[in-house]
Length: 360
Ligand code: 6MZ
View 1 (cartoon, rainbow, N blue to C red):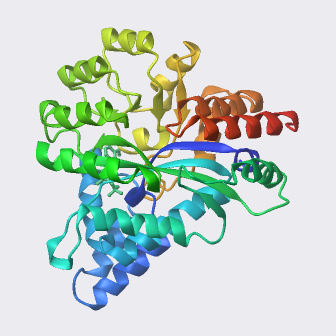
View 2: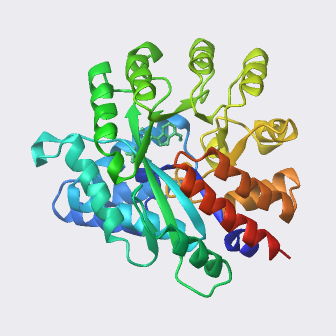
């Protein structure tokens, strides 16, 4: 496990509100409990419960959103989540979150995202690079190399994806895409479609997703968390830049996925905890890995599922028999699937190349 922590890693599928530290959630719940807004002992029970079905997970998110959705808290959790990833040697993070509107506290989707960016600015325990205009990328590479050997502060590149929740209307989804376009200078690179997979219809989101792609934003889709074959087919036909999960694919869909070479964000613990896949023995990671399909290990919701990216690498190692060299290559190839620009890719490639020389 220690070794999995020590290697540089790339995280491409992490939901902000799913990645909050338990201690922070409990502290926030206690605060709201004192004001009578939530019953803090109920919240504690729900937060600490570890075996949740997929539908229970979405109920938990509704509760988390009650606890976290004010500007100050959004800023705090963003800062902490980025620092937590960086401290386990995640060197590039694509953090996704659903811009939220809450009229009662004067929150708009834009002000929510401004609070997220404020959180990135507030990062202090590590060095962060999150805008496309960072000038000191070269220094970054060198210092990440030092980081791998424990000699300097941790460094992390962060880019943002704006999520469209499946409960949203077409108009609301388009509003999110427009916001993403406006916020490119603050590190926003793409759009994600997520939320409860049994809610909403593909046709509702398609106009916004097409618009995003036309505008040069990257698109990743939560695909196949439930066996909705019509939707899985439509998602594969859309040819997004990446897919999340891709669990419940039929034989023909698996064949289409492999031919498409669309990279898949694999979230092992999440799939098992939500019972989307009954056991790691039958997880599609093995088949896709053997087929040399582009894959990246991710956490999904490190807080909700009590995991970390290092743990996910460790699980892949024990469940699928991957050795150190294979795990390192898995981490390194993830650089090919990031949504940041070529200069970031180049820096990360050089950094992984240099770390590879020092592998034992
Ligand atoms: C689908 C998920 C998810 O956006 O409020 N989310 N959507 N499948 C999953 N697998 C378990 N895990 C998280 O983060 C929380 C939101 O991310 C989506 C849900 O829409 C959830 O409300 P943000 O930061």
